[in-house]
Length: 122
Image (tube, rainbow, N blue to C red):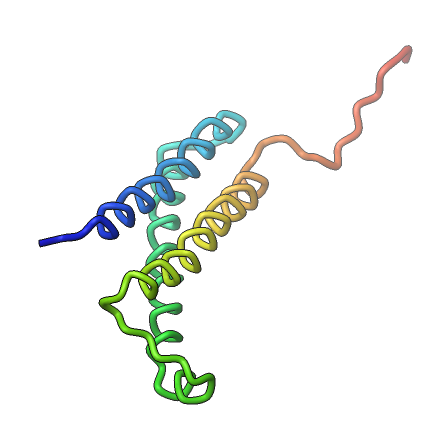
């Protein structure tokens, strides 16, 4: 039987994936080309970022060298370990997705930010 922490994690994963994608989709109107390709690519990047950060943190937390070096002993079945792991992974993934979305939009946008507009008589 699953416990409440699993449901909380699934809710956080849905939030981490949907909210940055929603922000990205709203700001995608200034992009030339095919927006469906950009949407799909950004969605896949969000998923890959989540799994990559989760795997890196799990490898660090279960590394025998680091646990011996710092004297850390994590029990994977305890709630404290789960919340520490979630507290490290989910905010970092959320911020990474938002940051990558801003960089990606800047890269593919039509408008040039360095362009000056002259206002007045010619």
